[in-house]
Amino acid sequence: MTHTPGSAGAAEDGDKAVIDAFARANIVAFAAELAERGCPAEGLIDPDAAEEDDEERAEYRLFAVHPHPDLERWIAMPGVELAVVRAAGPDDPWAVECDTDRYAWPDLIAELTDQALGPIAFGRNLALVRDELARRGLVFRDEDVSTDVDACGGGYEAFTLRTSNSAVIRLGVPNRESGPGSRIEMFVNGHGYVFERAIESILQAAAPVP
Picture 1 (cartoon, helix red, strand yellow):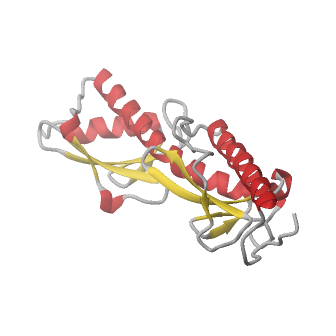
Picture 2 (cartoon, one colour):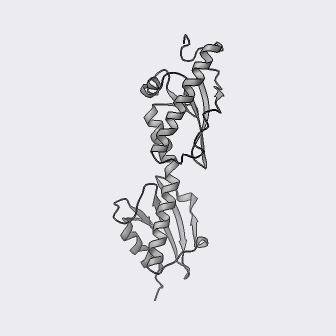
Picture 3 (cartoon, one colour):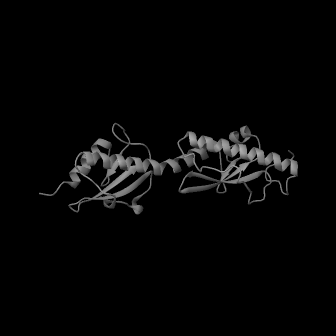
């Protein structure tokens, strides 16, 4: 191909077919890495749904990527050899782009993986807490648990737990796998504890006041 990054004008038909093929192959490889990291594979990408680059660069194709069913990001993928794109840093020619920001390939994989798996880990960790509390005799129904949007952030999702005796417990759940034996802390009413201590703290906070 004779085009250079950012060149103006339309690619010739032969070049365009090559660009299309490389871009599709690259986005398939990109999606495969996301899936290997645990992102849901179903609906992740449609390699045949490429769009022309909105900055009119002949060598890039746009793809909608869904690392999580509730998360859509737009990837501008260069239509050149995969090894070239993988090796490019954010300031290099042929860097992969996401929502107009330029990335090194592994950095974008890591960012999208964290964004995708965070909600999954939040849900799993909250379920572990509820299951262990239920095993210990403290049951929280779905209507007793709500997300505290204003307190979310820093890799944690904040939940409010309401007990039958009107106690209110603030629970911070991490976006990484936690549970029995894990050293990753959860937060109960602002204090950090490993899983087992968090359970004890919740039970104490929920205990009826004599």
